Image 1: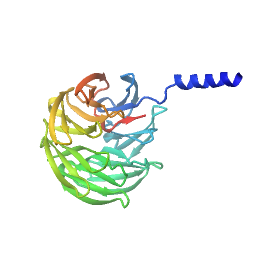
Image 2: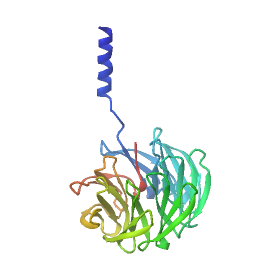
Image 3: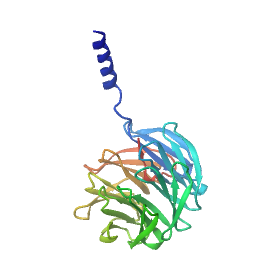
Image 4: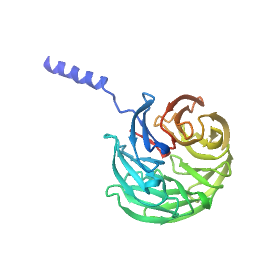
Length: 316
């Protein structure tokens, strides 16, 4: 009887406790030096962390224990402990630290140096720079391939994307794309990269193996960043100048819809549920939530001043 009672108690505890923590979105607010933490289950900001240096880029460690935030005015990045919800380290890297990402194994952090035209490779444990790799002019967006073999870098003033071999930490190839590429994303197979070209108002679709463009898709004004959703069947692209998000069918490579969001949308990332897409609106100080199935904005969350959230900002 006692064993039976204990078993019931354990079962009750198991089924009443949350099976997993809700995913959190970490939104950089550049104009008020902060990070807003959005609880995606509650649909609201549950905490705000002070991060000095005009935070811009965001990357979350694969295991979800740390968030890395680029701080251009502090010439580096901040490390946030997600349990403590506080900055536990600041790292000086370079004058133009902007784009930031982390390897799929969590062992290395990559920071694009906008001014010095290179990418710094940082050991995630020691937080020391272990290599500096020259790329094109004004590198911005960064993305690592799913197999952790390649790093892709959008070089804004060179109108190109660099491919870096992560085994040797050397430049492998460079491909020309549209005018002033900024944000980019890669599909789950690592076969295609989608690059938002700010000045040519289009998206370049790049085949990764040979680094050859396979399509150019027209979108709206000043596309900034992009995110894949619904098993990579749709690409959503933020258009800064007209407060919209373009929807591209990745099978036909055609724009199929346009969704109105907030003023000056910039950072964009897909929720782990692969259905909802979060968009940071720079001028509105908000985040718009899009249902990618219905192509409707289902919620708008007030964040901080100058929300950018450039990068992969979802964590555990």
